[in-house]
Amino acid sequence: MKKIILVAALGIAGLASAKNIDVKKDKNDEKIEKKSKDTKSSEESEALKMQCMQVGMLVWCTNEVVSDTVCWGEGSGTSTYEQAVSDSIHNSQLLTEFTCGAGTGSGPGGN
Image (cartoon, rainbow, N blue to C red; front, side):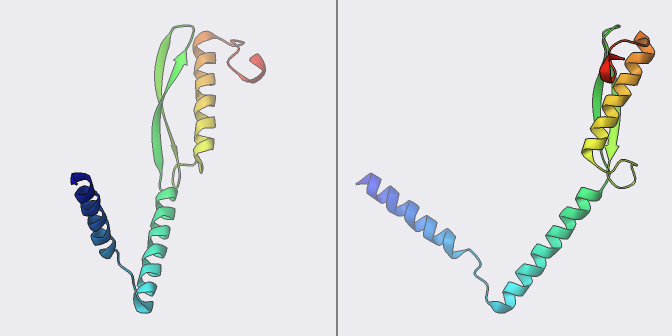
């Protein structure tokens, strides 16, 4: 009996919460569409903002980890995240070559 009451209570609660859902008429549908367009433009503007992350670069010959900050987006000089990661890898290769010497195998082709 308690289970039936519990199931009925959950069903009623579900229906009550479903009543709180806004079903808009034609005039309000336009408002909803405008709001969704505004959120899309704000998401696009956030994607264009400059974002940065800090990464650690391992110098294997001294067993040190050196931090590097890479940024991408508007105003950073790097447009995409992928390019920022590529730049970080290049920075790590240059640091390893500088610290451990040329021909350390840290570059493309083992240079």
